[in-house]
Length: 485
Image (cartoon, rainbow, N blue to C red):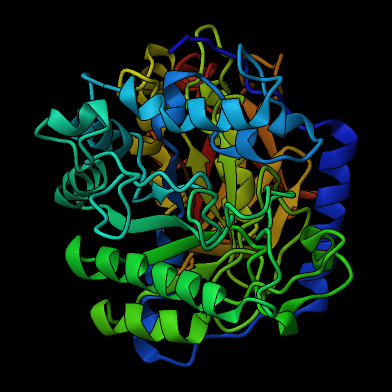
């Protein structure tokens, strides 16, 4: 088979803006439903205290360096564009794409190396793609041959061929919370994209009301695959379900119904049945049915964006470190350590979690630039993490270049100063706005073990920074001041 690479093409600015408007409006129109199960509520609080996790996208598509799954989707959008020698003929392209697994042989796959790097960066939980929309399973599913462990897959001969199992085990051993990403749509399954009809768009390609037995078969397939993950791959904290166009009719509104195209075919996979089964194997499991607002969306997941204000429900921004969800091609540009840390602070100060999107390349390893970023993030987190983990938003959560959090345990307030891109160095006197600590409060700069002198100023307090430490902190991505009550 011919080999080719392509660059992941970003969505246009207009498309992103429209999508964000739709997501925001949709969330406002659907009140959050707090779980009733006490075990789920307890897990939700644990998850909220973690603050920082990693979302790992990885599949056979990495061999070509193409966007995960979406080049199979026959929609005229930038992220679905086909490239390479098969691009002009859809059926040839689909056949070639499904044969990538014959080439995909990531001999550098070492999930323990990943886990150690992410742990050292301060991440507390992982979400790994067991199956993306293309239907290729990164685990040993008994309900399909389209999987990494099948003999038709080059990597099947490797002792670590059950990739998801290896990943979950390595991260579990490092103390991570464990989440399974699972795509509800499956573009390989004959009961989702029925070969009798050509695929029309991202949706099911037949009317489920006309062919209920076929749709029931797909419901059972989805249920069975999720059950084998929930029952055979150890302890899970959450299941992260993607493909929000697969949803029941009672969750649709004007914005979300556009996902169903012109035909408006309802794709209900019976989430009550799935959630009950999953929690029978995993008590307290968080179910994250993305963008399907209701009982099975235990927290919400704005993608590639940070909400402007505090939200009155649990949420997690999933945002990539680089241009795409995994390392597709050489010379990709990644967020700097400073940008990543300030992103985390912005999200946590508003009560959210950051799920940072990072994935290995076709060899099975993270690229050097990613390891470098993780190392820098970890160095900062080791000193400043107490202002991140186990915190809640402060009454005042932002002011200019400042962000604030508050400890859930002792009510200490953490004030983060976020230097601008070109800002270097700090002065001997810093104005911390808005805060009015009690007279006997002590203020520390994390990384320096002595209390700082401070005095009340017109718009807050003025903090004196000793000459001896001005130089030490001049290049920090962010400064963290702890105000003890």
